[in-house]
Image 1 (cartoon, rainbow, N blue to C red):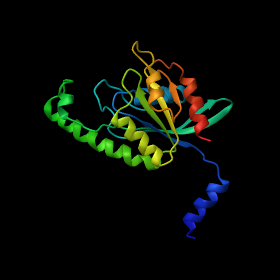
Image 2: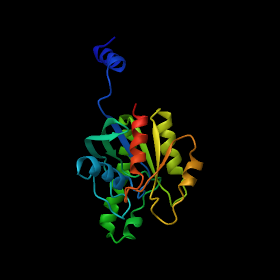
Image 3: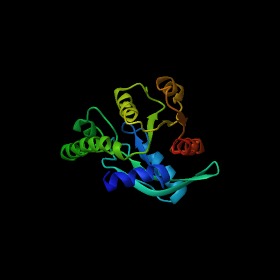
Image 4: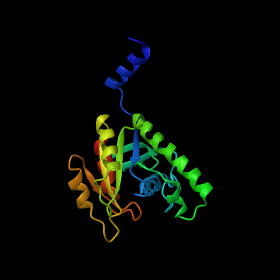
Length: 207
């Protein structure tokens, strides 16, 4: 057996995972970066990335390492991986509608497309995935189904986050009904509502 494989085998039996790589997945503008910022601010005092109402603000994987969360009497060290939003179609005209000029919109669309590819590639580097969904939208979409299907195929533990429950028309029950095979945690990443429930769910699935 090659030394590298032998070392991995020994580590798998005797070693303990020092930290978990927590991936934030979901379509654009569901609050991935807002939620990542909330977690990071709670435990490090520093944000992960910039938030904008324009779709695909995050176009590269953003990382925040060594975030130590304390919940239920235990500590969980995490490396936060805030992924670009997953989309089946990216059209530069969408960004023009937000006030960007054509050249800037085309550049953003190109970067956003690369970001989607990067996010999929990073599935190989994720230990636990948070799939964030907007509680005000229909959860049963091609993007959500594709993300969860890819995670299930790789046996990556999934926690679905029903985000934006602070909004008047939020309906997290629809998310639970659409994906009953996975735990669903209702939160408001913006307000911090029920964020402790999310920490407990992450800790549970990182064992």
